[in-house]
Amino acid sequence: MDWISENLDKAEELASCGLCDRCLGRMFGKLGTCMTNDVRGRMLRAAISENGKTAPAPEMCGLCENVFDLMDRFACAVAEGVNSVRSDNFLVGSRVEPEISDKEKALWERYGLENAEPIKTELNREIGKLALPMINRPVEFKNPQVVACIDTRFADVVLDIAPVFIAGRYLKYSREIPQTIWPCRVCKGKGCPRCHGTGKMYQTSVQEVIGDIALEMSGGEEHFFHGMGREDIDARMLGEGRPFVLEISRPRIRDIDLDDLERKANASDLAGFTRLHFVPRDSVQEYKCADPDKIYKARVKSDGKVNKERVIEVALSFKNAHIDQRTPRRVEHRRADLVRKREVRWVEAVMIGDDEFDLTLSTESGTYIKEFVSGDDGRTKPNFSDALGVQCLVQTLDVIAINYQEPTRD
Ligand SMILES: [Zn+2]
Ligand SMILES: [Zn+2]
Image (cartoon, rainbow, N blue to C red):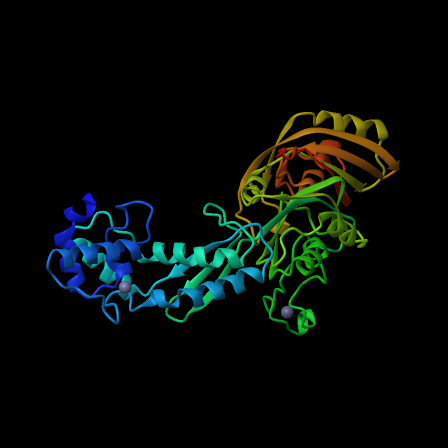
């Protein structure tokens, strides 16, 4: 009972300010273990009357305005909210009127209360305790999948649902769709005559092919696509595919069947998907920061006949070649104009016709392949056309490998 007698003077003054048992007890919330603030408060009040003073509990608490009387209602609202979503865990949060928090802090300072607990902490814990039996899930403090946030002013519960992240690899078979949703340049997504009201420059995208299905399966709100780089719209993505993370916001069901998603998304002939698996949020950053080497296959047309041996010789001459690439004309309007140093690891050539050949190239991340082949009016130096002495143009481009090893997780 030490902590009570030590704090009796302070408790007397606080009780005379019109605090309820919970608020009185909470001012000493870190003292005396294994009891609620309610019990703490009643013990203090009993000690005060034993000491010959009267400090009855008020009808209306001057600090919390009897917000704790509403806890059953809050707990039901929390349970209803959390139960509308499928998750492995949950957490209760609350928003307390700033006037109440300010008043509380002023009391801590005035009476030098170093062992007080904030009202928010008590509300979260006590409502959580009441809600727990109605929710068949454990409480998770570190990374909760759902946070039921109570606004005590309106007895309102807002659900904060953590997004779900699905990683995998995609193939893009079409030269007519972009990787991600591309908003209309004119209306910026609102819908206009230019985009026939779709708000988009392209009817669909790799993102939408899988994202729309994932959204429907999860009951989520929106999807976001984080690719490990991207290819041009007119380039295909083949081979083992390109790593990506699909983010689904506010999913009502987070443990969707990824085999099923893969099967449904692969019904499209525009894009394909493999190796789908759930990843933590950190993966988005990991994927965005990776800059793996890539291997491309380019169908190239030369301005007139070329000699087969010469083409092969020029291709081999670019082994571990350093090139300077000034920002290409075609992306000039959206990228800073500067010169980037890139390494071409190796190039192989196979003749197709007198003025046509295939180049397979391995390059450092960020190399502009079309410009390396054409020279881009001297903006890329050295370049394939100059070395061959004949102007060449890439007809079609495919990415055939992304040199990346996904981290193994348990
Ligand atoms: Zn109170
Ligand atoms: Zn438009």
